[in-house]
Amino acid sequence: MKKLIIVIISITFFNCTSKINSIDSSVFNNSRYWISSYEVGTTEEELKEYVKLYSIDNQTTHHFFYPDTLDLSKHKRIPIYFDRYAKEILQEPKPTYGFYKMAYDSKIYEDGLWLISVAIQK
Image (cartoon, rainbow, N blue to C red; front, side, top):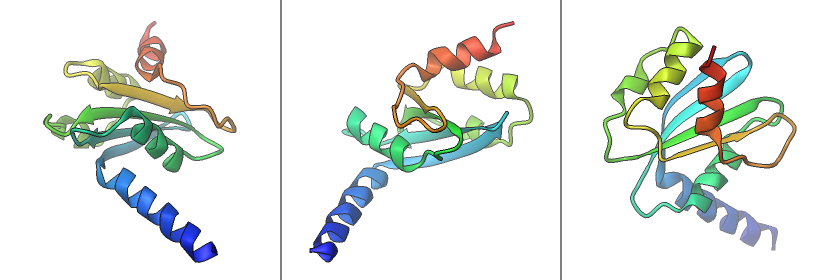
C-alpha cells in the first residue's frame, strides 16, 4: 500500500512539474521570488500545487508564472536591487499569475502582482 501511494504521488508530482519550468529564483529581504513558465493547458490548480511544492515553510515565497511562449531571458540576469527586480516583473509582458505563501502559513494568496507593486511604491 505504501509503495502504491508513493507511486501515485510521484506520478502526480512529475505531471505537475513537467509542465512548469523554473526560470529564476532570487532572495530579497528573506523572501524568495520565483519566475517560472508554464505550458499551454496547465491549470491554475497545477500552478498552485507547484507553489506548495516549491515554497519553504519558514520563508515567504512569491511565484510569478508566464506562458512558455514568451521570451523570459530578461529574468535570467542576476538581480542586484529589489526595486529593479520588481519593476521588471511588473513590466509588459506581466505574469499571468502571481501567487505568494507567507512563512508558517499554508494558504496560497492570489494577489502577488498587487503585493509586489505595493512593495515598490514610495
